[in-house]
Length: 578
Image 1: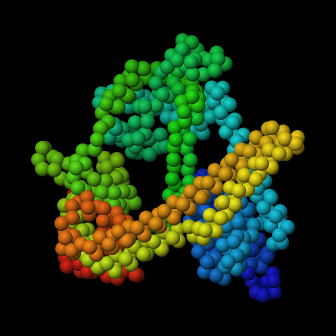
Image 2 (image 1 turned 90 degrees about the vertical axis):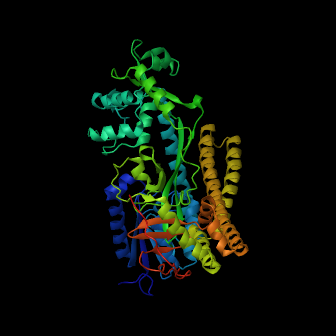
Image 3 (image 1 turned 60 degrees about the vertical axis):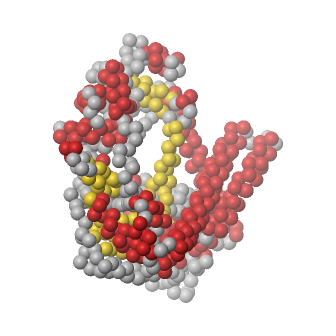
C-alpha cells in the first residue's frame, strides 16, 4: 500500500455516527459516511484497522458503545488516526474534542475529519476550534428558533406535536387535529370499562382478545398507556367558556361557542435524555437512556383546543377517572415478607423480576419471583421464563453466597474487580476531564463579561447579546452537568470501597456459623453490598457483581472466574418452577 509519510502506511480507524433511531434504522447515513471514509482512506494511503459504527447515538455524550470501542483500540497502540467524515461526528461539544485529542495523543494517535479546515499547527488548531464554537453557536440558535417557533404556534392554538394522539389525525394543513372515529370508539370502550371498575390488566386482556392493536400497532397494550388515556384532558370535553379562559382572545374567536373541545397541553413537562454507561458486573459495559421529567409551573402550560368526540360524554370520562383513581392501591400488599432477593433478580429476557404473592381459594400463600414483563402483560408477554418459588430460590443463593462469605479473600478479590470496573467507566482521566470542564466554566464567565462590554460599547445589539448569552448559558449548564457526572462517578467508587471495607470488617467480626441466622432483610443488605444480580439460566443461575459465575445442578463447583477462583458447594438443590 502506498505511504503518505515515507515510513509505511498509517493505520486508521474509520468512525461513523448517526444521532437518531430513524437514521439508524434506515442505515443510509451510516453507509454514506463509511463509503466516503473508505474512499478518503484509500486516497490518502491509509491502512484501515477497523470500521466502528455508532447507530442512534448522540454526539452530546461520550457514553457511546462505538466510541468506547475506538478508545479501547487506540489504548492498545498501533493506531495512527481516528477518521470521521465531519468533526461533529466525533462529538458535538468542543470540550469533548479536547479530551479525546489529549487522550489519543498519549497513545500516538490523532483525530482527523474530512472537513478539517486547519492543520496540526497552533494556528490550524485555533481555526478548527473557532469553527467548532461557531457550529455549536449556530446549532444553539437553530434549537432556540425551533423552540420559540413551537411556542408561538401553540399560543396560536396550532398543534405542534410530531404525531397525533390516539383517536385523532392531522388536518390538511398539519396544524390541527380531527377526530378519528374508529380509534375514538376504542377510547370510549376504555372509558366505559374503567367507569365499571375494570382494572388496567382486565382492560388490556379484553383489548387483546378483541384484536385491537396499541397506538403503535403492537398486539398487547401497556397498563400505563391505558391509564394515560383515561387521565388525558384531550379526551375530556370542555365547554367554550372553560377553553376561552385558557387561550388567547384570538384563539377563542376562532372557536364555536356551542361546541365542546378537548385540551392538548404543550410545554407542560421538561424532559431531558442522556446516555449513561455502567459496568454490567461481568467485565463488559451496558448502555441505557436515562430520561428525567420535571413538571413545569402551571402558568407556563399552553392549552391547545382540539375537537371533542360525540362518543365521549363528559360524565363518562369523569366517572372513569374517579373509579380508576379510587382503585389504585394505597400500599403494596405482602410488603412485610422478608424477600431476600427483592430488586436483585433479573429475568433471562433482560427484564427485572418482581415479587408476586398468590393465595388461591383462600388457602396458604405462595411467593414467587416473576418476570416483570410477564407480570406487566398478565401472561400475554413473549417471555417464557417460568416463575420461581421464593422458598426454593432463596436457600440456593444464600448457600452459595454464605459459602463465599466465609472466605474473605474471595470477597475482597470480587469487590476489587468491581472497583476497577467502575474506575474504568469513564474511559479517560477523571482529573484531566475535571480540569477541562472547570476551564470551560471559567471561559463562559470571561466571555459573558466580554460580550456585555461589547454591547455596552455599541459593538452588538441587545438581540445579539441575548443570543450569545443564551449559548453561554447552555454551555455553562452542560459543563456543570459533566462535572456533576464526574462527581457521581467518584462517589460510586467511594461507595464501593466503603461497602468493601464494611463487608470485610463485618465478616471478620462475626462467627461464620452466625451467617445462617441472618434475617431475610439482612441477607438482602449483604447482597446489595456485593452488588449481586442473579439471572436464571438453563438448569441453574448466573451471578454477577462481586460474585460471578454459573451454578449448575449436578456439580459441586462454580465456573472459574479470574481473580476469584472456583466456589465449592456441598450440594446444589434444585429449584421449583411454576
